[in-house]
Image (cartoon, rainbow, N blue to C red):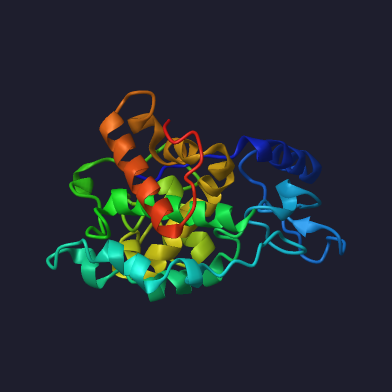
Amino acid sequence: MATLTIEKSLIAVILAGIFLAGALPGMVKAQCGNSCSATQCCSRFGFCGEGPDYCGINCRGGPCVNNGVSIADIVTPEFFNGILNQAAATCAGKNFYSRGVFLDALNSFTQFARIGSVEDSRREIAAFFAHASHETGRFCHIEEEGGASKDYCDENRTEYPCNPSKGYYGRGPLQLSWNYNYGPAGTDIGFDGLNAPETVANDALISFKAAVWFWMNNVAAVMDQGFGATIRAINGDLECNGVDPVKVQSRIDLYTDYCNQLGVAPGGNLSC
């Protein structure tokens, strides 16, 4: 289940931006615009600079890092449908998720699985689909089972006020959850996350975009630490450190299977 995390290596960038902008915490609205030089990138937080914190994951503009890998050549119809075909005909996701829509969603995220080597790209794709398969029962479910009965409103996150008539339970390939994820996801990819969270379960393109949005903002940056770090980023509090080893092993088994299918070694640090 997708929850919010922030890559520590970028905290210094945020704090520096707050100081320079003279803004209050939580109110930074920095935008690069045309202020960056030709050698600088606009970072995910809207500040100009050079190096991986600016030109790496979620870089907004400038000479952003991108290894040029073709995701469509890796996520072949055989690979994607090999997962989807394991879902029963009665599954809601059977006629909702598709490879074509997944690839369309990536048009909004040009750095997804395109940082590092070709092998890194294959491992990241395997990791994304391992988590998606685990969360949805191999694309069987669109919504979290029993999610409507759970409280996923963090009232302390006042910048993302909950609509009392809406539920922010898991939806989509990575089961996007909580108001503090639906709010910014909606702003970034173009839907009303707080007042219409059900869009993630009704619109297949938004559904995949929401999953990739969460991945890029909360998971992609830890891929170089091994698959175990991605489990911790997604559902660490509920699964890691011996809390739920069965679910952790399920994710690992799916990841190693998909790595084998994609012809890449899974690497180390598989567990959390």
